[in-house]
Image (cartoon, rainbow, N blue to C red; front, top):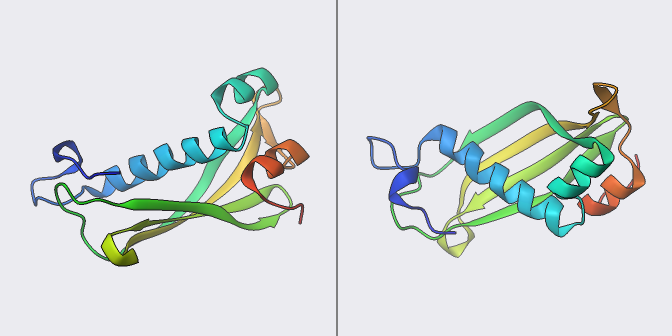
Length: 128
């Protein structure tokens, strides 16, 4: 991905809220590529919900800078699982790291449910 003018704040670097948007776009690509995209979420009436975010800003990102976003599964404990993401600058220098504590939300029951085998397979995770 390339950092664009619309990502910048008045200081000329990426706005903190924009990091969350970049991470979200990457998570959507990740789960869609894993077979659990928006159409699957609508059909099953189950999808991920974020419960907590821990984010660390390490290096600034500036205009027209190329980045790579890495996304992967972390720990799974009962109904709660972690998604780890990082934004990398050139030469794999970490610009930002985040841990998202999430749950699988049942849209009909309006509550968290245990991650299903299909959901875990889409994320490359294992039951814990």
